[in-house]
Image (cartoon, rainbow, N blue to C red; front, side, top):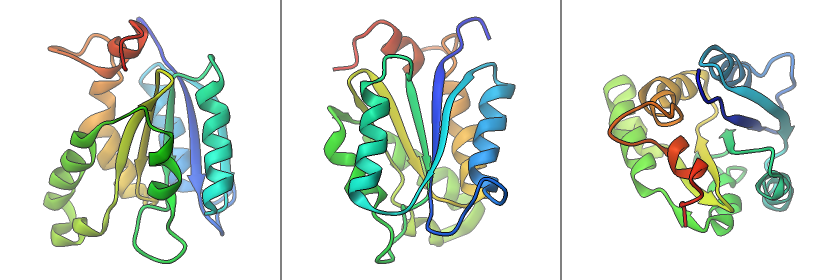
Length: 168
């Protein structure tokens, strides 16, 4: 990777630990294999205010360029990632959730409508929120994020956008 990004990974879960967090670990491994740097990794319970605080601290940290969030995107009463994160966005990346569900449809069929994958930009920091399954993380990484976080991807990519500071 000619121009690696500084990426933080957040797992949203009331039950996972670093020992059994296969989704967060997959994202850490995948971003490393792509040549990016893991800036921080945390696990946070599914609480709107704790999630906002954690992500806000990364948005304010100039050493974090991308935040990858896994978990909390379903429809149960404990799934609050979209509600926690979307108020923080300066700009929502609507196409991310749409494309994620389109790609996911080929893998899990109509169950993909239960995914509330979202993404946005806040303070020139990219934030991508995907479901908590390892399969969903693989789908998001291989189907979208690997290319969009690669500054050499053409015709355009998000890495270039945030590096130019023109994401508002």
